[in-house]
Amino acid sequence: MAKAYWIACYREITDPTRLAAYAQLAGPAITAGGGRFLARTTAAKAYEAGLLERTVLIEFDSVEQAAAVHDSAEYQAALVALKGGAIRDLRIVPGVD
Image (cartoon, rainbow, N blue to C red; front, side):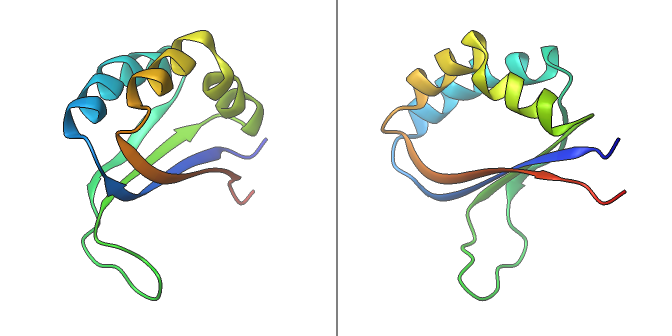
């Protein structure tokens, strides 16, 4: 089974306090669900339509596991804390076998 990757590209951080509250809840929810943080920082370079904003890359054992973490009550609580704090694009993509 191919690994899966959760990729979050932030377009804009509008409220750092909300982002910090989100991180306090999201990190534990993601790791408890089996997610492994591979990158969590501002992009080193950005090309084409990319922005030099925060980017997060998380590895999961499967797409199903990644989606289950996203849909969990714990992670949904983190999203409530983030509301209005950032504009971002979050994708779950399967890895290459």
